[in-house]
Image (cartoon, rainbow, N blue to C red; front, side, top):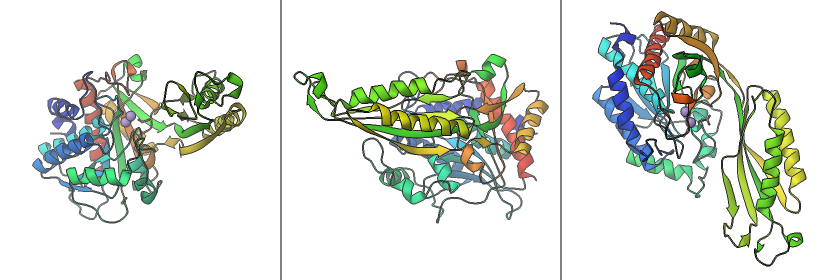
Length: 413
Ligand code: GLV
Ligand code: MN
Ligand code: MN
């Protein structure tokens, strides 16, 4: 039996349903933010399945979780596949989790089919891909690839002031796994990540498989305005230094400056905080996040300059600053992996198209370490980062079948 034939759609779907209970929300989505008790529960469930299949399990100092199936050549570098199990606060059941479960299904399918690859295969669940609780996102893979420093990341705080190091220690206490000592990161021969598309292109084109060619560049910023608290009922307009009013002036100018004619630039303000947050006090401080993305670094540079100029020009009578939190350059995936994904989709008679990724993924960091690529499947109406995110069991299985065939080929090189 081929690896693809051994993929079991029912098992893969059931595993999604089991994981969706961990942090499940009334609207059918999940709230399983990074390093929360729900994240720990997902780690334990994956570990229990891995143990039941006799795969080995280990974690590293940033909490990435690895499931390993041995190959026939103990000296050969491994091939890896996976994604993330953390979610947005109002996340869906498939973003990230599909990539982890598809990788695990690939290991199980090969086990069921009795197919031993030359290289070991590793399924991975990267820590904190979403970056909604702890910034930056794709953190575990960035540390693994040496693009972010472990010590810096351990000191990052969430919005409530919880230090990542503490949350990670709690998580690993609740979901223990053997620790791989030393700095995270080890050599890989290849990496392939499966994900729902999170946009409408595959569905609109009626294609089952997206052959992902690359990922657009992304940057995140925090803008903070400083004014002065004052009485809401008595303070005349001229005497106010309203930090939220300054923030809204800056925000509207930014929306205008980032509206491009061909609708390629992505600009999002996703989190706003106003201090002290009292209805009858003029705000003395406000802050908001900016997420900006484009396939070209040069375009991002141009728009970054615009954002800086707006912050300098629009704050008065308050003061304001903008700090860049992350910058990830656009990624081009490995041409051989791209061709392989397309060839395997064709061989399985699955309709497919080449496409870039608008969303960020852990693969963008691992692509700096080894040949890497991605496989997309459609999601309903292209909706993601939303509790109603949906995908069909057949499409999830189809993406996994392509993955198995690609992994077998890479792992037998
Ligand atoms: C990942 O969820 C992203 O923000 O692209
Ligand atoms: Mn994701
Ligand atoms: Mn996401």
